[in-house]
Amino acid sequence: MRRAPYADRRRAGDVLAGELSDYANRDDVVVLALPRGGVPVAARIAAALNAPLDVALVRKLGLPRHAELAMGAIASVGNSLEVVRNDEVVYRGGVSKATFDQVRERETAELRRREIAYRGDRPAVLLGGRVVILVDDGLATGSTMRAAIAAVRRQQPREIVVAVPIGAASTCTELDMQVDTVVCPCTPTDFRAVGQGYDDFSQTTDDEVRRLLGPRG
Image 1 (cartoon, one colour):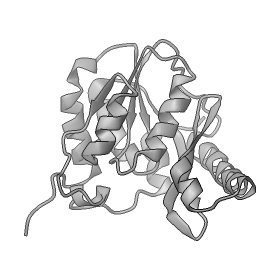
Image 2 (tube, one colour):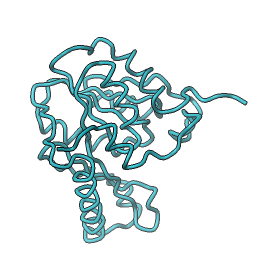
Image 3 (cartoon, rainbow, N blue to C red):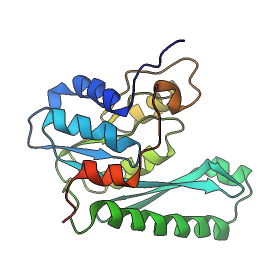
Image 4 (cartoon, one colour):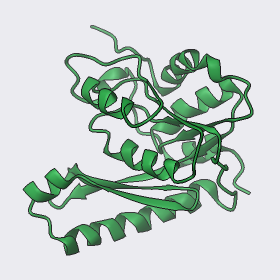
């Protein structure tokens, strides 16, 4: 049986850390994880680079009756809440403004709940003038990553780096035009889903996210 490129998310993080070694031991670097699956990957990167770790809270806005299809995404970074729409999906799905707003409000409430659950009273890491490395466990359509990029950019970082273990080549190429650097070691020609990059792609739990982020204040 053919093995996946990565045993699990931790091993994927180790591989990415090697790709990002030029950012090690610098006081201007911050690692931001997209929960939940991006946190175990990002935790290994942050430890290897000796950089602070925080989260960029992101929620997909699923199409009504087809929740797996993203008609947009929202992201919270620091004090910024960004909404990114996929106008083509909204148009094809016949989604009204009222319906879009209803989904956005519901997902914003869930995003805020997770923000409190993961971070507690601990303030967000400051991003202004710093190098921000955005990490997820993979890229498919890139909707959530685009929302995270938009929210990070509002904080006026000096540089934005997107680092993922596996992704669709077309998505990585598109994002490469939006940020300073994209690091994605694995872009299979037969890309179907992020999970194909892992032998163990079991769900990351809220408890694991809290543990990896450390004391919540």
